[in-house]
Length: 388
Ligand SMILES: *Cc1c(COP(=O)(O)O)cnc(C)c1O
Image (cartoon, rainbow, N blue to C red; front, side):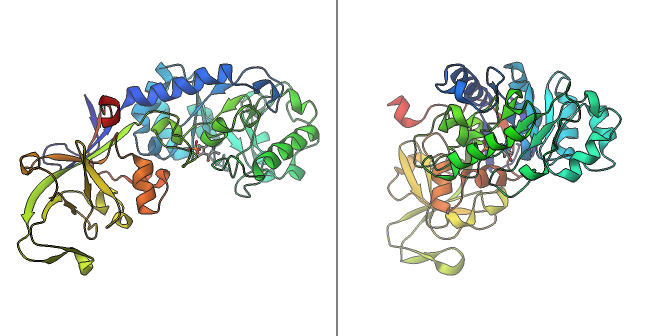
């Protein structure tokens, strides 16, 4: 088993990342793209749709330097990170025939890093285009043009598109990003595709260029939202881009915490900071060694559960920095000796469940996991429903 991050000896948490499940999620997306109905209706004329992988934010907390090479071995050849720092960190472990694209794009003085590390810039503004197209190697260097069609975040306003391609023999890949792909019925989705097509109209030969539209949500929406290169992030890591709709892929992450102490309650008591929970005589509580300093959200206080076998253990009282108290009154005592690991996130209570209980999104849960949790790469095992 590969490990990374904190020392495992003496840790009271364990973060297991199932690389096979993660790679399997990518493979399923890649395989489904070949067969996706409506692919021919995708914006852009070039044939076929490729699956990239978004590995920004340390592969959503799963360890980019382990995840990206595993995806490369499965055939992934295009990776996206948020900034140059992430790209430079990842490049040494990714072979040069993998494109490594930087979403925030290059800034003056960084071009040498792009050249030496073989990085692909995403050009997001007229200023960034003017700067990049003047660098000495731009004529032969790949790049993306990110056209803003409704995010109003990064991206070129369609009015900023140049009247002609600066290097017609080396055209950019044209990309856009969807704002509402987590809501399949949202009218902004078709609007953005229409705006993207209108932007392609303005570029000579624009409809023959490669395009990249869908992230995880767009992949689920289907062909017109794909383009020739999709950019899945959260689905690779087991998150659901459209909560409320069936989670399409396998869980990848398991977060366990160790029972440190069992408390037998013989008179009514309050639990934790703020005395926000009350337990009665006869209750039994397990204190586990995880807290918000590990990335377990404080907003899960009195709302989330942990799992032990088929049992659900309610979080009782506030989550503190290093500790969480669970109600184990209904669990046979021999199952909860100190030292027992319980699942705070697992196959039966996934990142979406915890996110929903805590009023967060799965992206925040994953990227919020802290270095104090030692990371172990290995199987996370099937959920109870699957074994039943
Ligand atoms: C983060 C990001 C993605 C991946 O999004 P998911 O919803 O995690 O699939 C794709 N494209 C861009 C531009 C992004 O910023």
